[in-house]
Image (cartoon, rainbow, N blue to C red):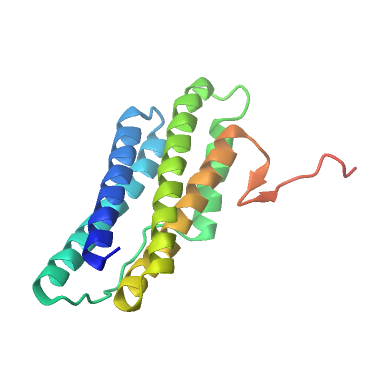
Length: 174
């Protein structure tokens, strides 16, 4: 795949992920869930802008500058604090507990599109060279962060007892 085609395809993926978060934000009933989806939606919009700039640059100069690409994913401590609050709101008997199924379904859909997008970026890193590879390496890092945070939210909301792929407790220990 040529770099311009890879960037155009990346734009399609990012637009799809952006739409998914926009829909999730609109459908979520919990205010914090809405904010979670909004942050990720806005980040996907930043990715779209970045990719469109790289495509325009490639079209104009046949070169692409791998500019800095930031992420809005918060620190581990901030995520942990937010999930502790979420667990309290979703505890048995907590007001509004039944509404979390909508958020869980939306999170699962978000994870699916993040997984698909991440797979595309990994393939571009594997097959492209030079600036193309460097361009998509950063996207792999960011998308893996998105996957982790969405999975952590799923684990928290569904009460699996797992936090970032680590069991929070062991029923076999006394």
